[in-house]
Length: 242
Image: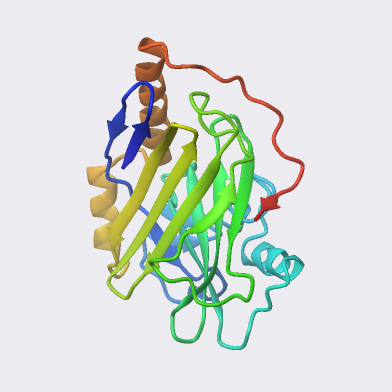
């Protein structure tokens, strides 16, 4: 769900398909899913972690955590919540690297943001002492990356994360003055099966092409009502901000 705050009103809610996987230990998978190989539904390291189109997967996450002074303790794991490739198409507006401890508590999250101009930037959310991130915790990051041409590169994001055995929830409250937007992602956790993957392809065909089409449709609606348009600035030099 996205809801624009202030100025021209606009809101929408769509169903999307996300996978929650452990890239370093995928193990046995359904016949219709592959890791780093072509299939109807697939995950590829190249799509995540680092330069867009030349990602390094979970190793990139380990390197960025080390640079931030966050040590991967024994028993901690790296999960990825992302839209997979479907029929070879690939584009995820935002993916989430979730670092969990041996009790499945969140210790850090890297929000990996892509825009439709080919750029990428990531926001690292963690407490200074890497204490567990609770659903009630508000993780704040300054916006430094151009996403929508109808929002400025200004203000701050306020993230809320909840990872439970039965569901996943992300809330992003973006504010700049009286404007901004509220975005939420919620879904129940189900075991990945070939039947479930095939059902998703039937319900929401074309994968990320559908997502890109919906993004541009919403942009046309805002353009039609003459919402303020911001030209794309150069992306930030650093890959990750905190």
